[in-house]
Image 1 (tube, rainbow, N blue to C red):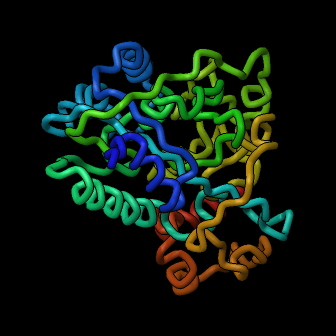
Image 2 (image 1 turned 180 degrees about the horizontal axis):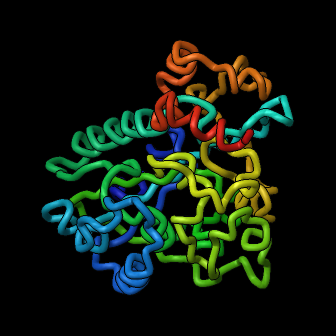
Length: 308
């Protein structure tokens, strides 16, 4: 009986666990990304995100992050929700935060995948990563053929758009490796650059994080700069503008993850409901949500900034 190759098995099992796509690449130094990251940091585009300056070497070489690493398994998990908040005047939440925190959902799936790999292929060592460690998710996903880096710096898949979470398994098991997509399918389109309310996309594939609405509403812990007043497009948590206008997202399909389903009560809240939200309601609504990251006071700061 022929033994199934690790690369074939892991792609099949990933699909069974709900992942949209899986790509596999060799764990090596990301030479091209090194100069880009260094330039981005030197220009201060990380803003107050000081953690982006840490672990520079580990961000570029997974072998420094996981001992004996030979393979990066990149996985995409769809979160696209076609429904939106029902009140057009209500402050907006990014689609990725409609449901339960993706970190927990995807970590559980990666743990299952890792344990089953060890059962099937013996002593396999490695770690799973879900947007919480110095891993350049989009670079690895692009290298493994899952898509290309668009002008908004998101990974775009030709058949499914960009509303995906990315995560990885970095393991010491050698596999058959995929190749990246040779063609960037953005062409001459500049929809995302033109639509960005704060002009944060300063060049193709270059986002000045310190100008991004997601940065202001999530990452920035101090007061939002006054010079972006009137430019927030009514976003109180995150921003989807550069994805909403991307032509490739006309191919986005609704996710199938029950844990990403939104709370109907939250989706129906009016502008005044948000302005009057109590700390108790905030905790009840967002206990398991990415929105909890701002804290009650942070979300109130965002809402107040929009209405003044």
